[in-house]
Image (cartoon, rainbow, N blue to C red; front, side, top):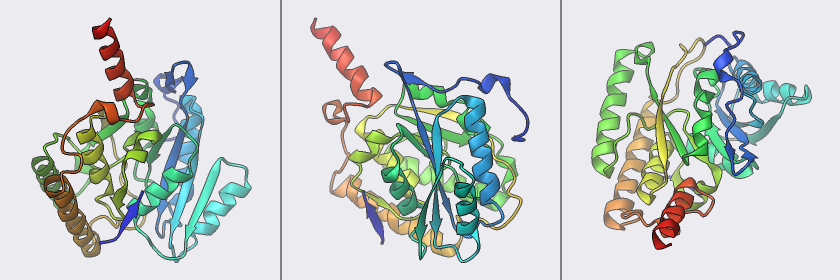
Length: 286
């Protein structure tokens, strides 16, 4: 199995203003990593909606599009956005390398404090996803769960429910959702040495980071109905790759005992979990 080392956008929502969090006086910045495979019809709107949401939320950031081997005009659309002066970067793959590979590569190329994956299919509402960004003042990870599940068909909902149950039971976690627009403090990703190239990457990151002891919060998220194109998440190839990555992660966690116990001493020193634990130790020893 391949791995990699490691709402209407025109409507102003007043409560979103000035949601950009600060840590020790520093205004946190954000990179949206946007993998795209044959999303010529969706990528422009996905990028522009995200940038408009940045403006409404007072967030300083950029969009890093990963053109993952598209055979259509996705790359040309992104280059046009870049030439128009938008804060957009492009990483181009000649052949598809997978959403997990694309996300980690995008995160590595970022110089921002926080990274998150928004899909290039324009399915997610960026205003809704950014509404809880201020929580990054207090945690290392913001993990969403889908509130309006009815926008997906019954088969997709059944697969998601079964998938969530298996992941939670297998790895001793209790998350409502293990995909979607998860925000990560970029520095904590340095602790992950290897991650799946496929759709299991998000669950794998959450499993390993939560077992290490990083702080997280779960927040509700709303999906927009996909208007054009078809999802790649439930293809047979994607499901087989998820199964292989799941079995490998089971082996790493339960046989090799990687991330089997929390030890806050070894967390990244810029993480909120490390800072809070250090503060508690200092206060108890004084």
